Image (cartoon, rainbow, N blue to C red; front, side, top):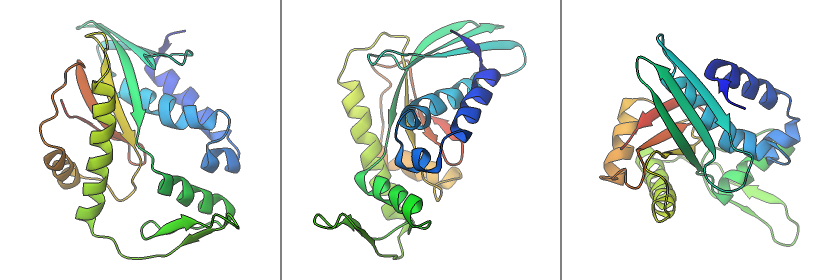
Length: 205
């Protein structure tokens, strides 16, 4: 059922707070959909909300596209489907698992799981910011190309979400966009990037 944007965001935040520690970090049960799909959708809806506009958002229950729908009415009227894709690597999942089991995890450096013991080994090391943004740009571009290869209605917005606590500010976004290059919006109406750990959202195309 369509829900007003602020109410929807409060509901999503409350549902995430209800997750157990294991559900949150291991993304089991409803955690994965909440964190990787519904939460980004809620932040995109808040982006559109402003005085003079009514914004209603709805998350899709089906496994087929789209992932959500946003309707705007007031001094302008829009209705758009939202397709969401989330950038999360195998190494990211290992870092989250370490946070759950050990309580700490290095933000950068080599990390792997022993195939025999299943124990995770991680090494803390320095990381060049440019290298991190380059890796993120490659992952984002891969997600974009995968989505762009499919057919979507002309009203569809693509939202590419990721999480990186070290990625924030104008300079980081500028470097990310420069590394990705010109990304045409087609077949999408618009393309947005969202850093879920800083709530920074940028329209890219």
